[in-house]
Image (cartoon, rainbow, N blue to C red; front, side):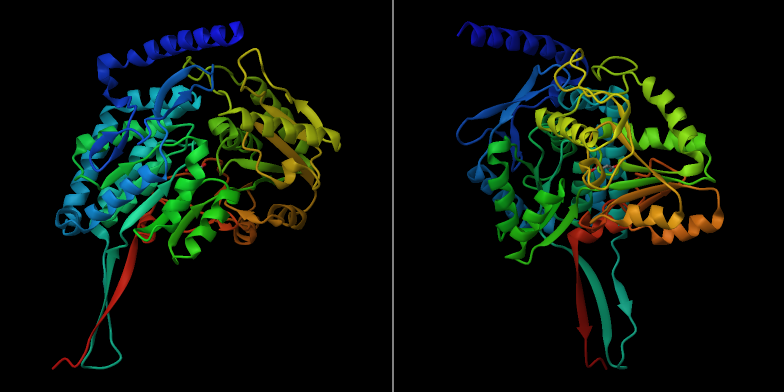
Amino acid sequence: MYLIMSLNLLQRTLYVTRSKSISNLSCRGVHLLQNKAFINGKWVGAHTGETFDVTNPANEAVVGNVPDMYVKDACKAIDAAHSAFYNERWHNSTAKERSALLKKWFQLMETNRQEIAQIMTAESGKPMVESLGEVTYGNSFVEWFAEEARRIYGEIVPPPQANRQIMLTRHPVGVAGLITPWNFPHAMITRKAAAAIAAGCTVVIKPAEDTPLTALALTKLAEDAGFPEGVFNIITSSRKNAATIGELLCKSEKVAAISFTGSTEVGKLLYQQCAGGIKRIGLELGGNAPFIVFNSADIDKAVTGAMNSKFRNCGQTCVSANRFLIQDGIHDEFIAKLLEKVKALKIGDGSRDGVQIGPLINQAQIKKVSQFVDDAIEKGGKIIHGGQRLSKHGQLYYEPTIVTCLRDDMRLYNEEVFGPVISVIRFKTEEEALMIANGTQRGLAGYFYSNDLNQVFRVSKLLEAGMIGVNEGLISATEAAFGGIKESGIGREGSKHGIDDYVYIKYLCYGNLQ
Ligand code: SIN
């Protein structure tokens, strides 16, 4: 009892401390910190009144609480989005009007960059510099799709008969259900929602339970931008209700399309649930990215690329390099240079200046990372650096780690670690590297470093992934098509192709023309 009271007291104290730091935002815009969901243009709680806490992974302090919604609440959001889609005001909106609303949203997000980033760091543990980077990245999707909205063209196709005209026109599919992850709490929402809205859809967003506050901050700015009621809806729930809400979105006849970013396991489940209604689905799922360094590579550039790819968001990124394949001739030099950089990483609470590595998101994540490393050690992996939790910083910190001698029976080889662990395999030939790199059912991203032009062309062609970094470790860009092959997903986000998931093509055959 005493322990529980002390814990409560401690938690309250932490909450006060944290709310003070968040309320520092108040001078510049505390209105972004919301504790309600948003349905049909109104801020609402769960019908039961239940809420759940959102905690800071850096110190487990409570940073806010949001409604713990159920299927009944989600139905209201779907109904609102459905009516809004058929409401004349939205249905007949022009591309120019939708573009203007998205531009307004973008401008408000730009004005509030700092506050959004602070909220993001507080709930995700991401270092401030990365949160600001994500705000730039996330905002850029809104700007991009504001521009693309006006270029959703149709086609006039030469007909096979002289008295016919063939027209192909593109139309919004209807309500889009967007299920987004915790690792990019801003950009994964805007990459989907801005594309859907540009196309003329209405949206119901279900953000991850670990990071709903960033999502609600963006929603507040969407409200301020003036989207009509029911166009932009967001529902929050804890883990206990997430699966049933996901199932509802996939099975509801009022939802026309689903877009999901997250694990392959959950993606497969949602895909099955969408099958009953032949529902359109976009999936951006897990990877197992190879990062190959050939003998001809510029080693310094490869080391920089490796650091950028691996340690972005503490390794909790779908496109993070997962298996490092280093050719025999440069293996030892590459590892020595990499080790120097890894040792220099500054670890700690992401809100502190200069921190590069924050905590992992939650207990499940740190447990998984520890288990993967322990499994590798048991099977003969060699720890060059790290390999431990860093409890002196907090419960969720894991040391940046380098493991060599990776083997194909290890979890680090076969599964996505989603943590700050570099796993290294030494190889001899290009064929061997390609065989290892492609020997997985995942195919999201791949990276390789080589200065041999013929090798660059050969490997680019043969590497099985939706996205490839050639002498580059950071490939994400609004203008590029983001997505995977094999079990890493279906569809593309960002770029001009990002609209495709939210429109259908109507074929109009004008016959018997005089
Ligand atoms: C992800 O990890 O899901 C997305 C990362 C990115 O867009 O770069």
